[in-house]
Every structure is written in C-alpha cells, then in structure tokens.
View 1 (cartoon, rainbow over the protein chains, first blue to last red):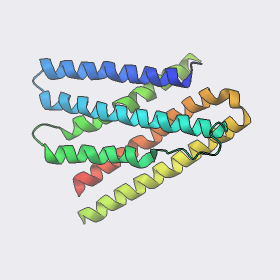
View 2 (cartoon, rainbow over the protein chains, first blue to last red):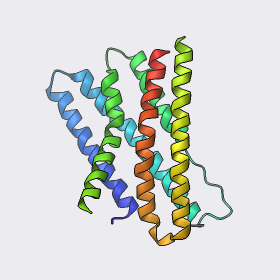
View 3 (spheres, helix red, strand yellow):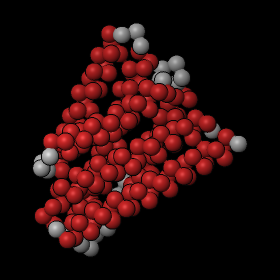
Length: 125
Length: 68
C-alpha cells in the first residue's frame, strides 16, 4: 500500500482536477453561480483535507512516541465545522453570487473523492 | 425557535462527530502502539474514517446557520 502522504497528495490532486473542471464550467456555461459556488466550496474543502492530514500526522507521531515532552497543537474538529459556518455566511452575505447547494456540494467534493478512491482501493485488494 | 433548532443541529452533529473521531483515534493509537511499522497504513485508514465521520456534521452546521 502507498504511504499516507502519497495518498493524501493523490486526494489533493484529484480535488484540483475537479476544481479545474468547475472553473471550465463557470467559464463556458450560463450557470455561473453554481460553478463558482462549487469551486469556492472545493477550495474550502481542500483546507479541511489539509487540516485532517495535519492532525492525523500529529496523532501518528504521538502514538509512535516521537513527540515526547511536547504537546502538539491540533486544529481539531472545531475548525472543520467552522468551515460549514463560513459557507452559510457566504450564502447569506452574497446570495446573488453563491448558491447554497453548490457550496455544500463543493465542500463535500474532497470527501466524495476520498470515499470513491477508498472504495476502489478496497475493490483492488 | 430558529436559534433553538440551530443549537440542537450543531450540538448533536458535533456530539456525533466527537464520539466518532474519538473511537477512530483510539483504534489508530492502539494499532500504532502495537505495530509502529504499520503507522502509514493506519494513518490512511484514520484519515478516511475521519473524513466520512465529519462530512455530515459539516452539512448540519450549514443547515443550522441557514435556519438561524
């Protein structure tokens, strides 16, 4: 199995590819609010992926006792839940620019990619 | 009533995510402690688990703020 860092990098690459598709949709289709919402939501989802990667790495180091004597700072779940609040604020503040469904699907894009990628990995083994 | 609904949505979502994350991290730490050479594999599985657990509470927070 690949390393943890390699797999997270693969998730980031897949998300960036999907964001590029969203930008193409924003540029070439009349549904600009939806695609810009998907793109912005995916960028916020990328922050969540980075936050989870950082916390998972810190937990692994703590478990392997490579962080003796120092208490690591974990972003935790609160910052990731706060991105949901950020989405709601964007929709309330800029209703003519952003679409709620688009933003929610956008922030869920990395999570959906993680789910399908893991299912394909399980099927392969 | 909107504020109450938002509080219940966020509270229960955070409770579920907290319990789920705690169980995942507990299993990961136990696994890494027993077999440090499997750290990378266990971290990957922990990452996928946390992603699946936290997806719905994030949507719950969005709905809570919209309702409020």
